[in-house]
Amino acid sequence: MSVPTPASAAPPGQPKKAATAAWIGSALEYYDFFIYGSAAALIFPEIFFDESDPATATLLSLATFGVAYAARPVGALVLGHFGDRLGRKKIMVFTLMLMGLSTFLIGCLPTRDQVGTLAPVLLVLCRVLQGISAAGEQASANSMTLEHAPPGRRGFFTSFTLSGTQGGQLLATLVFIPVAALPEEHLLAWGWRVPFWLSVAVAVVGWVIRRKLDETPAFARQAATEGVAKLPLAILLREHWADVLRVVAGALVASVSTIFTVWALAYATSDAVGMSRSGMLWVGALANVVALAAIPLWATLSDRVGRRPVFLIGAAGSAVAMFLYLWAISTGSYPLTLLLGIVAFGVVYSAANGVWPAFYGEMFTTRVRLSGMAIGTQIGFAVAGFAVTFAARIAGPDGDDWFSVALFTAALCVPPMVAALSARETHRVPTERLGERTLAEAPGRETVAA
Figure 1 (cartoon, rainbow, N blue to C red):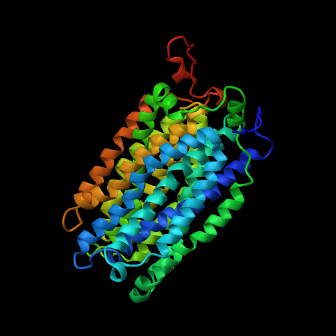
Figure 2: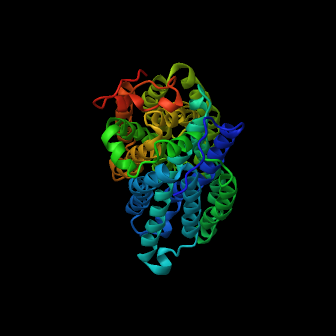
């Protein structure tokens, strides 16, 4: 197997190029991923499931949203392995193409009225492919930007991956606003397919951007000196198992995003509250606009004060903010819902969301960084994905017990807080020495101070 040429530092302009590629690629990739969430909440219950039982149809539709998260750990095992053996760039290109293809196919699927129960089966299969793709996307993009980033600015540069996902969510929401405003007949007949078909353009643009990006100096050095690991997973579980568990626990904070994006949308537009689809989509869109600005600001703060305090602000603050947001929805007040939605998701949650790419990636050495981030985050994200299904069950037969859902979401924010409190602070550790303290705990190794 050929390996990249070693390099001691990123060539001029590569950090910005890597961050830009991560932002645009993640935005395009997560456009695909999040349009599914909007469709699962607003449209799929009526065209893929039994309309005679709306509550069960909504529950099943939201469960298909979680299926992709269940597939993510499997994708993380496979793509993490090859990402640490073949390099970050190859995985970044592969995941983008797979997401574009699977999303386009969803737009081509027959409905339940056309092929019966085969329709939801095909929907689930495409959703699994989306999940496998997403499993490798963030970990490879995060590893690429972290290993290209200049000293002292890893938080800022890696945050571009997550601001890219917010950009993708914003784009998905903006596309769905005019679609959701279509007359019901046109929306269910063909309108819902259009956002999925646009994934062809997503895949082409992403491929052009990412194929020109250089491999990281850190991976090049590793491949040329010690060599790449034949079995990254074995090294990861032997030498970094505690940090993998921390990442799993930390990743549960993503439940805030899935509850906000999917369950709260379904609740607000249900008969229990009666807000308009377009209005609630605008709440998500404006919250994401604010997040685009908040994420790099929180990440820059973490370069100054550390990853742990900023992550804790996001996790603990989100536990409180979700109570306020869901309460606002329950009142039926749109201005209050808009304000608290922006605060909860656009500002508070962005603290954890903006810092975790650096926080998690700095726990591992270059040999297993992509595997560690992919496996740890995707196990946690799998729980977060099905949090929507649990929330639908917890909300009761009428789907209006928002307080229990808020309490459930707050409980899922506790493990991330514990993970942050138990983790090392790494924002000042040189890139080439990241993860060494974990290795130093093995017999015969010198401890590296963090």
